[in-house]
Image 1 (spheres, rainbow, N blue to C red):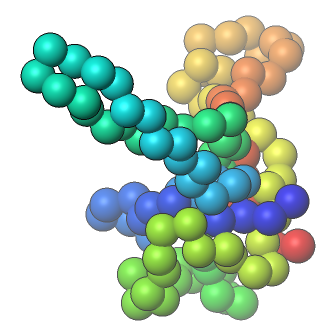
Image 2: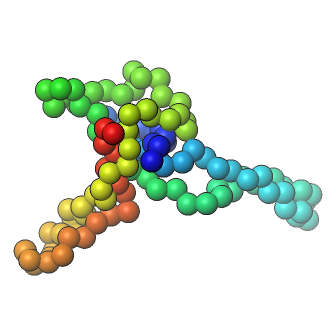
Amino acid sequence: MSVFFHKLVEGSNTIICKDAPANLVEVTVETSKGPVTHFIRKGTVQYGIYCPVDSDGKSIDARSWGLKKDQELQGLTMGSFCLDQEAMKTQPKDAEPIYTTLRWVVAS
């Protein structure tokens, strides 16, 4: 599964990725003030989190990579769903894990 750049998280080295580039459809709606054009997303998108690190496990600042919106990130793929740490704090120790809708992005 291909992975595409979505945005950098402000104040961290975390990259938000997605499994498809923007698939926008132009829709023009007639209003009392005349036609208005909107762009709507077609289909669903799965989002993921990528935290780049070097071979020593130290964070890499991805801001210097010059990533562009919807750029394919070669060598990465969507991994498992992220565990919801906050929700798990309120659960008994033997409870089933609770996951978010985000996935980890990992090297393929």
